[in-house]
Image (cartoon, rainbow, N blue to C red; front, top):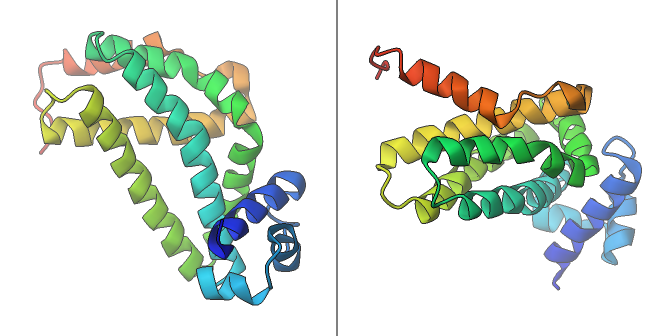
Length: 194
């Protein structure tokens, strides 16, 4: 690994052990086995490094788990695959509990820092595009606009359900409930605004 990758790994380690608020640049550099100056050289600031490390961690943990479910359910009707994905989200959240907590803590913290906030917004867009790509691979017959809309819905639901799971893990709606809501809205007969 190079210094950049070492810093990402060191940041993930320190964040998961101590939380975002207690993660210092010095601790991260020590865990990575690199100089303190390497943080500025590769990421610009500790905050941007922390955001990058969390984005990568959640993308790997939650994103890869979601991709596995989407691939597994590709032969099912779309709404049934959607329901299955969201039935599995509580276990995916549980497997990524510490990273989810750290991500929430980081999101609140960086909202006050323009540079770090911009980096987090860019990471959010990359996450959305990642979901589009996963869906495109699993369901190549879907139109590009539909892929984009479904990816946005899934991204928003994962973000909000992740927060709900942190607050009250047993209060999440099931995948069938979410699929029923989507079907009811679609069955309304009204044209979507566009």
